Image (cartoon, rainbow, N blue to C red; front, side, top):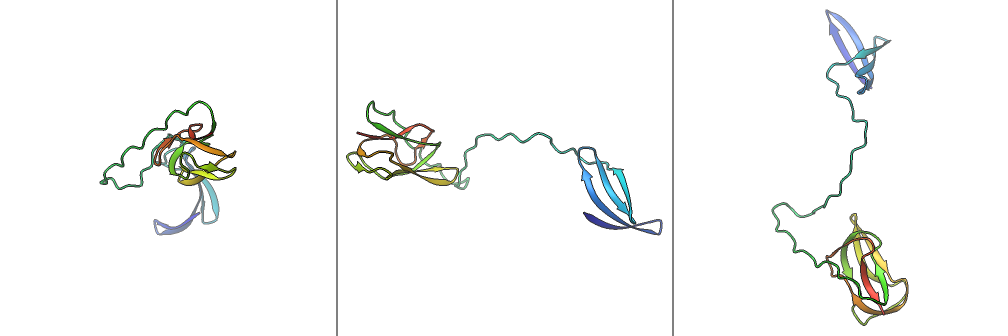
Length: 150
């Protein structure tokens, strides 16, 4: 609520702008204690639909910085073996295992950044790393193979 003191033809008025309705272009005002509903010129209607959200890429680098080199795209997973896949789209921040490493259930095998949050990707079974399908910095989609256990 906004309060105004107006002087019109030497008469003083205390005005409270209580509620402005952009869609009907009206306002509820109280002038010296009396309520009025008034029309307001120049008020633009508020949008009634929700804004559409589009997929966008966020870059933390300054516009003058050189672009980062493109990371290798995820390789197609080899046939056979247990796949550890990406649960959501994101960027690979770290690969914590190498081919030949033994992996225990629950061990973090990779770290994925999605929506500015780091997500640990854990093995759901024990095994030996047969193949690493992605490199650090790669962009992956949901369901892409990250690690193949043999």
